[in-house]
Amino acid sequence: MLKQVFIFLIFIIGTCYINAQKSAEDPPEVTQLHIRGNKRLKTSFIRLISHTKSGVKLDSTKIKEDIIRLKRLPAVAHAYSQVFYSHDNKYNVFFYIEERFTINPQLSLYTTNDDEFAFRTGLYDFNSLGRNITFGGFYQRDIFNSYGINFKAPFVFNNKIGIALNFQDLTTQEPVFLNNGSSEYRYNNTSYEILGLYSFNFNHRIELGFTFFNEDYQFLFGATDPNIPQDFNLDKILYKGVYEYDNLDYYFQYVKGFKSTLNVQYVTVSPNQDQGDTLPNFFIFWNDFLYFNRFGERGNWASRLRVGLASNPNSPFAPFSVDNNLNVRGVGNTIDRGTGVILLNTEYRHTFYETDSIILQSNGFVDAGTWRNPGGGFSDFGDNQNVRVYPGVGIRFIHKKIFNATFRIDYGVGITRDATNGIVFGVGQYF
Image (cartoon, rainbow, N blue to C red; front, side, top):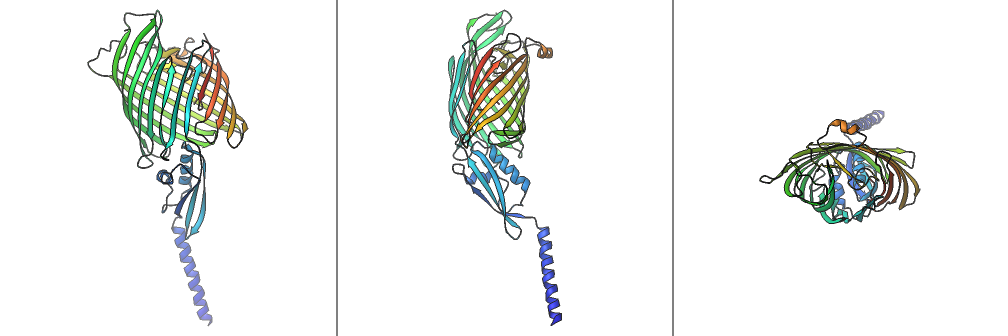
């Protein structure tokens, strides 16, 4: 009897040991991915872009990346995960989604103390068909009328391949700076753009494509130069490449991390056109470096550094502009142009009031930039005539449940040569 009991115990111990060894050798596995809380955002789309799937190895790093990727989507205000044991070294993974409303208007208003006024308004759905597709259009009034239509689907077949299509008919009054003074031109740009999008992995993605566009310049008034045509019309092709490294993490209105975006373009003028000496083929690139850091529970420091260069003919139609609504708050609407740019925007955002839906942020900023003159040298970056520094303050009204529902008001005051001051209104953070 004792012998039989001993053999039975040996059998039980051996079986437990073998099973333990097997469990130790076999990695934990995901039994099923459960999605909770999403309404308009399709469950099938969340599964498409997630690395966490039924039957794959349970990987906490991949789960964390999936959650951050979800929080980057316009439709997601917040997301988090939980893991529960199922059986036989298998686990259930739950993704919990807090959605945002993604059909929202766009509005930008800008003015200076010279009583200039312009605005852009539009309507976009950033989650069309529940699949993170952006579709919409805009209307702009900046002395003249302009409009555009945009379509972007970052994930078409999987979490790597996407496409973007854009059309715009943009007309503005542009200053042209000549040796004997300045003049004003009516500038029209009609363009058709197609881009292919590809994500290598969680952090790295590219965009490649081209734009067919027509530029039409018509002289309005001001100084003239016999070497500068007063009216000309050119068809062009723009070849475009974008490389993006994204390591940002979002928690509602707060952001932390680093992001770098390199934009490279080469523009050719269609053959058999009289392009003169003003608009030859040219190359242009710029890189935006973004850095965000949290301070305590309510503070967020945000910075953008832009470095850019272009082909450097001595032409008044330079590609980089100094503009109120783009880079230096308070400076005015397109007050100068250059073939190179070094720009720094830095600001501290502080949340001083918050509910489940509404957020109020104060904002203190410094915008500083310098430009290389057309045909000039790198020493232009240090010329005090080209350097502009504009500190200022602002306020943000944010709705948590609506994507990009950040209404901003900023007031910038120049402290460098020939400075102005002005108010900038807009939707969305300045950068």
